[in-house]
Image (cartoon, rainbow, N blue to C red):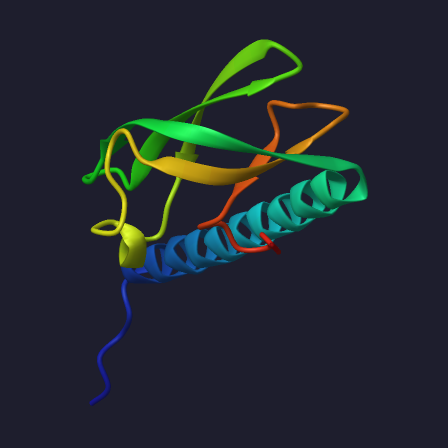
Length: 115
């Protein structure tokens, strides 16, 4: 005799499905935002060098300090785990920044950075 699936099991499966769909939608949205940011920077960009002020391995984040037109920017950015041992605090890094919004940057380690 086949076992009946309880109401709680059905609700759990339904909730799990909704959560998976929400994660997929969030991922697609974040990818689209990143693509738009890269496109915006490439429309009118400048290049400079920055200094890695600090690096946080557990979070795959680093803080980059750079100057544009005499103004100093301090920007936290993510980096891929494959470059975590290639960089350290105090290193110099190539940066492309938006001339319209200099706080928007791409580093040499970012996807979409073209030398």
